[in-house]
Image 1 (cartoon, rainbow, N blue to C red):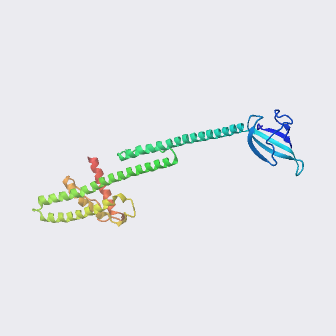
Image 2: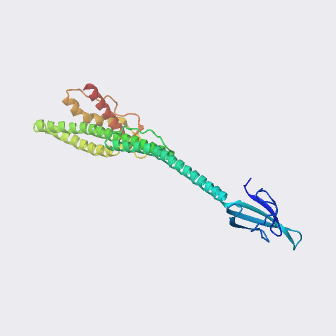
Image 3: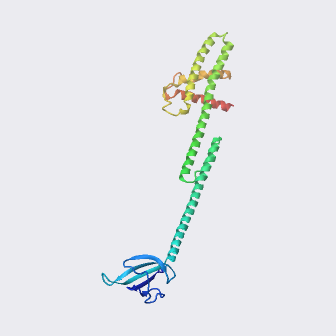
Length: 295
């Protein structure tokens, strides 16, 4: 099965038996003179090629050698077998390398595609398109990155919306007191000399409205955390004085619009647990909504 030749020689190195018919009985052989297990590689004139030999002695007793069993095989077939083995290994390594390169290319494309989409989305957001949404795809790392980008974009939109609402609320909250102050000053300029008692009354109210503006400015600075109970404490309070104070601020505006503005509440109401600044903003927002409906 291996293609080797097995030959038995006697003590004089004459062929006794062989697996190859070309080795005749009694043929004198050389190279089988091994007194112990061993091997060598040499030229074989019978086959006309280089062969590798291995021989083992046949012992009659502990000191007498009857002959040798010799096994030989062509080194050419061994080289061919080694070459085939190396070619097989090189080919397998090449296939593994090609498969690895192809797999790496596929993985790189799977990673690069969502990364390119994120790059385009980032540039769009930087240009002002905050409504852009990235569809998570690719490996787990890029999907996590896409989810983080979408959460960031949503947070940016919410922050901008809060800023726009803050600006709108600030403009409305400041408009009414400023308009009231302006109207009182005009009344003082127009009728102040003829009605000094009116001047004293309006000056007292103007000081109150300036104080209200200062308080309103502080409230606007914390408008973004109006829902935070720790930064917006509530206390027991009577709503009636608050309503009369707000009505006094809106009195000049109603008078300028030729409206009869009155407060129909008793001098005192049952105490409630609330935040005065937030209630004032809520009532003023009612004025803003009514103004929009009328316009």
